[in-house]
Length: 136
Image (cartoon, rainbow, N blue to C red; front, side, top):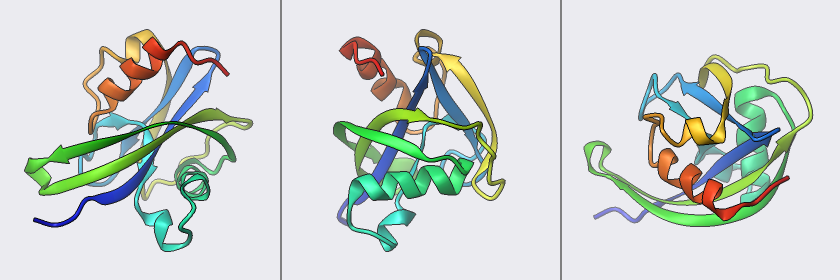
C-alpha cells in the first residue's frame, strides 16, 4: 500500500459563508469542494505556505490561514490515501479563478454547505468547523 499523501485544505470564510469551488480536475471533477491540494509541497515544506500557494493558484487571492485540524482520508475509488491539514481564514479580494483548476466559485452559508454533496470529505470537515464555533 502506498503511503498517504500530505494535502492542504482551505476553509475560506466571509460573513458566515464559505467559499466553494467547482473542480476542473479529477479526483471529483465537477464537484463543489474546498480549495486545496498537494502540488504546493513541491515548492515548500511549510504547510501554511503551501495552502497560501494553493489558494493563490486557484483563485488569485492572498489567504490568511489559521490551522484548524488534520484529518486522515481514504478514497478507495481513486486508490488515494491522504492526510489533510485544514486551515481556515479569509481573503481580502474577489476571486479570479484559474480555469485549469476551478470551473466556478460561490459563497454558501455554512449551514447550507454542510448539507451539500461535496467532493472528498468536505461536508464532514465543514460540519466539524460549524460545530467548533470558530469565527473570524
